[in-house]
Image 1 (cartoon, rainbow, N blue to C red):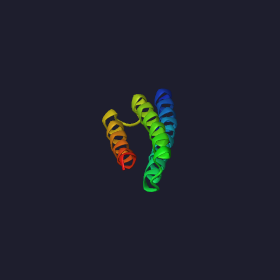
Image 2 (image 1 turned 180 degrees about the vertical axis):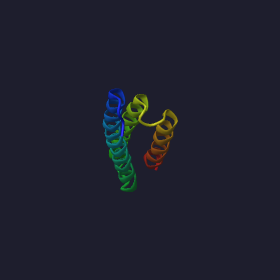
Image 3 (image 1 turned 120 degrees about the vertical axis):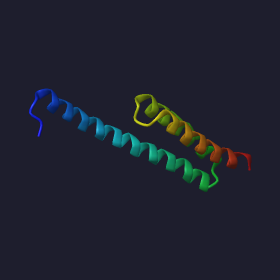
Image 4 (image 1 turned 90 degrees about the vertical axis):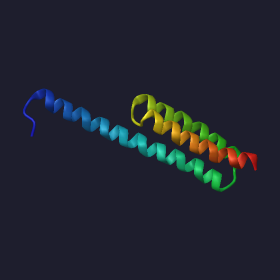
Length: 89
């Protein structure tokens, strides 16, 4: 166990940040799942609205450093490709 005050404080901060990051990542997965469900149901308008929310959430998480910039970009790209396919059809 840590002895120094600064180490104890850092551990508390790290735990709080871990919980916040975990909840944000969970929310990202939920938002992505909404897009996927709308695509599966062939609902183009719902899918586009959900995609906009997903893009905003992923960009925000990437700028906060919760997910890597490239990861966010890749996820957004894949979701938008799937939404684009049902929009064109």
